[in-house]
Length: 83
Image (cartoon, rainbow, N blue to C red; front, top):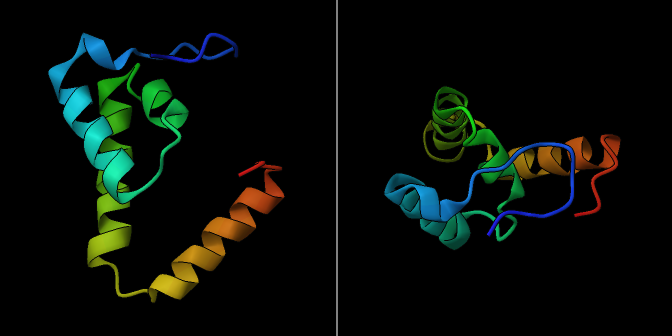
């Protein structure tokens, strides 16, 4: 179910079998917070680009996983992310 509050429209996972499959994989291997994925799914092309980038960063990049995690933490801190 999509979040009721907020300014950005989100897609409900029940609207698409593909999104249900992506959501399940996202929860199992990445994050439990689905708001980003639901918001990006409003535009399928944006979601595809984002998932391609994430797939590259986490499975094909030659950057150390520790450096990737440090970049995620710094990015979250700079943007005031509560997670």
